[in-house]
Length: 168
Image 1: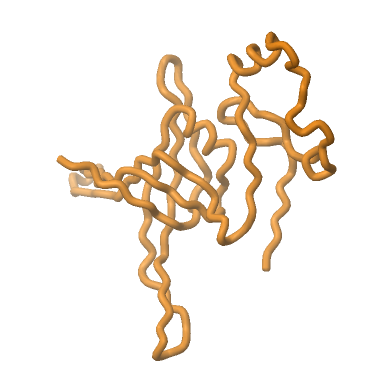
Image 2 (image 1 turned 90 degrees about the horizontal axis):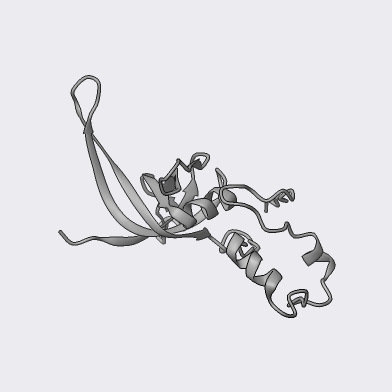
């Protein structure tokens, strides 16, 4: 069977559910709503088609980053492998849903801005502390904006700085 990869643009429809068990890979899931739009030139207006819902699964480091970065209602772009998950419910009826096993997730910058924050791993922090010149900063004179950015976060945690939401 050939894997099908696709890119889906939409909005996060649920809070991210993050799990890290003993000896298991980190996993995060959320629902993604994608509503295709097109311009109807005969009517001179934008039209929406039917909303398609996906269950998005992410694993390992990406799961941690998604749990720290993505929130319900935010516009995102998700790239991953399409799966059709089928099962029988408690009434023995066949059910199915579209799943997207993501390999990349990011904010849709056509709808707003986002600030990138490199995750500090324990090994990288230890290496930085042992390296000569470790106290040398990449940005020796931080701007007021950069000083307000949140610092590195641990796996699955959200930045502590408040996020400003601007609507237009």
